View 1: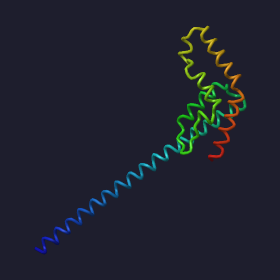
View 2 (view 1 turned 30 degrees about the horizontal axis):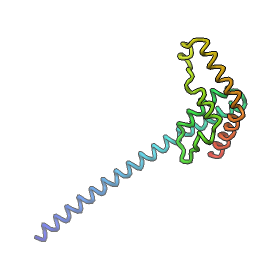
View 3 (view 1 turned 90 degrees about the vertical axis):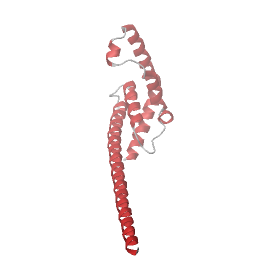
Length: 152
């Protein structure tokens, strides 16, 4: 009877040891996967931030139309994954207003397929919004550049 208890205890210890090793291995693999995912997010964020800063500087230097820059910045900001990501609608209201004006306007092939009169009308709306919102947009560009220079 003593030998059977010893063997049963030994088997239980081996089973528990094997399960503990397996659990430890799974936890280690999960940790490695989380680290890889974090590295991917950090690399993506770095690329997004680089693009945001480049576009913002181009807008500030008037090398990029305000409407095009606002559209591009808004999309990039939307894809950014930061723990302390600002609420873009309230933090950058000029960019948001410009984006809101142009977000549904046709581009590329869809623009080519539209009537010229309609395109002129949409261009007028866009150009007027650029004039009306210029100061607000440039203030937001300044805030963006300051924010991302502090992130480095």
